[in-house]
Amino acid sequence: MSPKKETQKSGRTTTAAKERSSGFTDEELAAMKERARELKAERRRGQAGEADAESDVLAKIAEMPEPDRSMAERIHALIKANAPALSAKTWYGMPAYARDGKVVCFFQSAAKFRSRYATFGFTDQARLDDGVMWPTYFALKELTAEVEARIAELVKKAVG
Image (tube, rainbow, N blue to C red):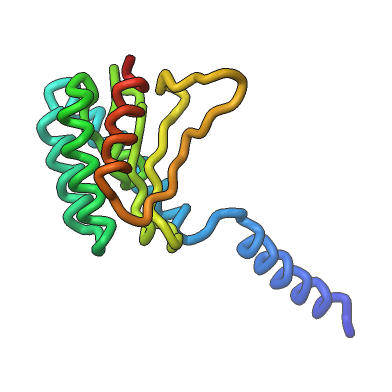
């Protein structure tokens, strides 16, 4: 093979290898792009945009397939009732709830990253510290009265 052909071939291989090794799935890349759009929208709105942010959350929930939509609607209601100090906002395309602009907790649809269960999670802004190790993400297959009570308890503690 001539040196010219080897160079051309290695160039194609390198490009393909770079594309495969980006480290992010298509869903993760889409979430990052969505976060960039959210940040731009937040800057345009300023502090007066809380009502718009909540309507964005409700729109994201409405887009979710069942049973995630029903869980997200119920979790939204639980958070509004048990932690009114938290404001709704989107975060990487997910419903999230923040205090002073910093996300405390969020709901992630199972469909978002093709997972077998939805997730309810807390960031390091949540005041859930319990010893040297504690859970911050919870898998959700369905919301029972017991699960809803536990979520309400955790959210209250998180904003404590």
